[in-house]
Image (cartoon, rainbow, N blue to C red; front, side, top):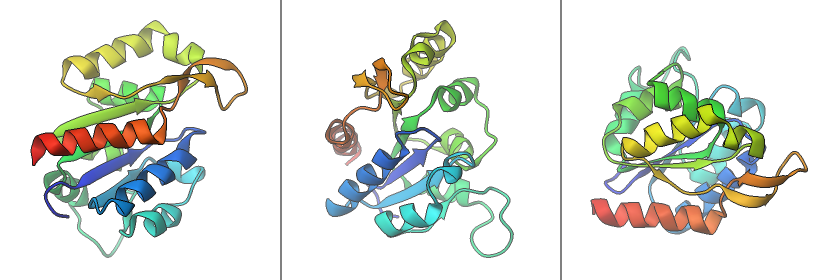
Amino acid sequence: MARGAVLLAVSASVAIHRALDIASELRKRGTPLRVMMTRAATKLITPVQFQAVSGAPVFHDLFAPGGGDAYEHLTVAREASVFVAAPATADFIARLAAGIADDAPTTAALAFRGQYIFCPAMNWRMWEHPFTQRNVGILEAAGWRRVGPDSGELGCGEEGTGRLAAVEKIVAGIQDALMKVS
């Protein structure tokens, strides 16, 4: 990856299909991009779909045998300029806030040095829960920039705040972060 590259960390949310749109838009703009997925995210969309959209292999298993770099989580973290968690579920936000590194995206997050962005996506009850709000505050206090969530109809059919921000809004946040590191 070249300077100005984005590392897109994808967690398991019903909004995961919009992460494909984020990756596609970044690629159209010529932004170097790597995608990392949580194990749970691979149950909703396959890594092959993200590879097709991003044009690069997708890292999703810290312990996959054979081929590749044994320290890929460190390599991609070292080469990226912006780390974007989208969608960022309540679980993913909690693990980041606690410094838990138990999968590809969270290990890369701890090894990364650069601009951090997270884009929450969850049910409104989860978003409003005091634990989630505490964890969001921890990330923001550590310098993470938050994009969203938006209000509206949620994947579960309910209305409220917790909807993944619009792709255009997320991409604009990423472009802003990239300008700060160029």
